[in-house]
Image (cartoon, rainbow, N blue to C red; front, top):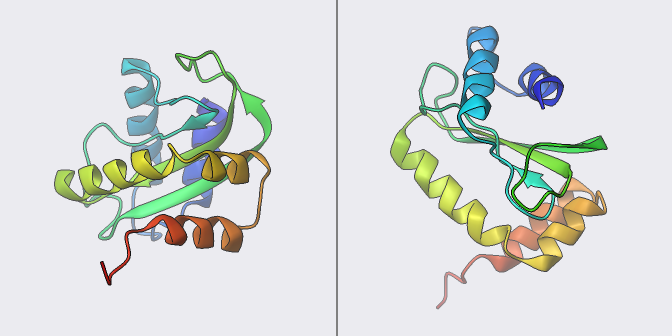
Length: 135
């Protein structure tokens, strides 16, 4: 996973004034505590402590891996998608995490990620799962 984490940090849209080296170190330290791999081939790497050192707004970066990676998932499945979570506060982190956990329980979302569908298709699918504003 460390190579994937390094690439995620390199490609993430954090501004240039942020310390990417410290971010990578925090991601590696978090993985050392316990794998962030969920089931169904998805991992949710994130720093141990949300911080505005890296971002002022919640960031979610989805990476579809060229080769599946052994991320020590409890179900033993190789990870095909890593979703980097960067949040400035613990409250925002929990909100994003709970929403993602719900979305990632949907078989259509997992299939879309596994099949490497376009970002537009994936975001449209996720939007369709959001509760309607009208009730």
